[in-house]
Length: 207
Image 1 (tube, rainbow, N blue to C red):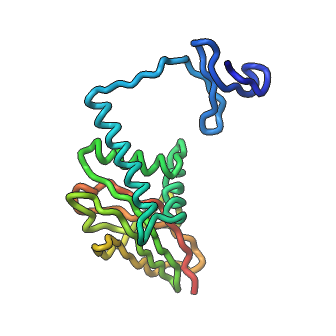
Image 2 (cartoon, helix red, strand yellow; image 1 turned 180 degrees about the vertical axis):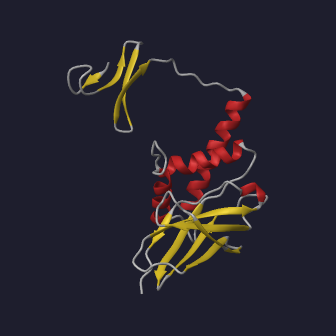
Image 3 (spheres, rainbow, N blue to C red; image 1 turned 60 degrees about the horizontal axis):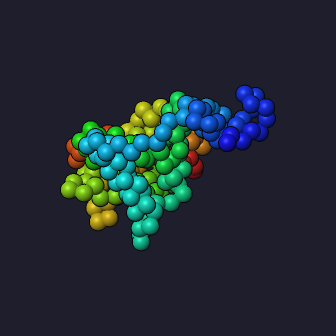
């Protein structure tokens, strides 16, 4: 039975009316849809898609419990900031999972970025960013893209890459002290990882 918080069709309702309509909240909106009998399709495509989802969720959880350089709040916030750049904002978790699945559907691989250390100095920002092993291959090159707006990362600098653990390091120089800069890492090699994006981090240089 639907539960009302005001007269029907005025404010909100939740639940099912007979087997006709379902009222529910979605991203702060009160919406209604036709009742549909749940299904569990097992087509080859559906099974493959579910396996990608399982991979993505497992990769996030693994990054969160690493013994060293685990995923921290700064990384979650960076993915949330990236998700906020879309016309319909996404949660940080949805952003990570969607990008992972998009890569896999394209026949590519993905990675989770974690334990970022970003600091501002005199006209400089230094960023150390860890990333997970991608399986058969891993990220071997990439750039840090940056700018003064989260949607206008128009400058770039090549990252120095390390392995065991996997790490990208960049120094952004010649910056304006007191100005907030947004930074994102984008792989350029191995080819399997082109299209992967880190979250968007930020820092402010200061003298």
